[in-house]
Length: 108
Image (cartoon, rainbow, N blue to C red):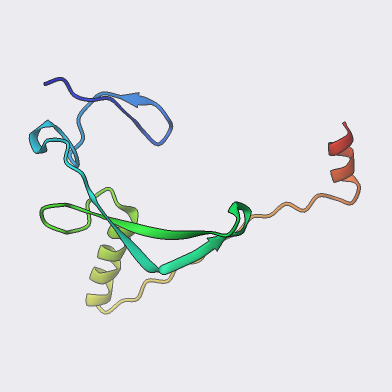
């Protein structure tokens, strides 16, 4: 059977088979588990609800290796078992235009 094409993160087509879904496992579906603790609303989408999810293997019910949230949870658990604690920070970047710059952009 010919491998199916897909798109990667950069919207580039690839044709090699993946370890997650391939001809050997019948291109099986994955389980998406909703993390209810991540509920929030998206104000710019008429307050539509948003939840983050974990992707699980349909046979083992374990997080798959390409699920970022699953990988982070696994590593954080290992770190905690070693007596350490994970601490992360987020840097938000915001650009505030100078007064009058917005009007100039709109009118140009």
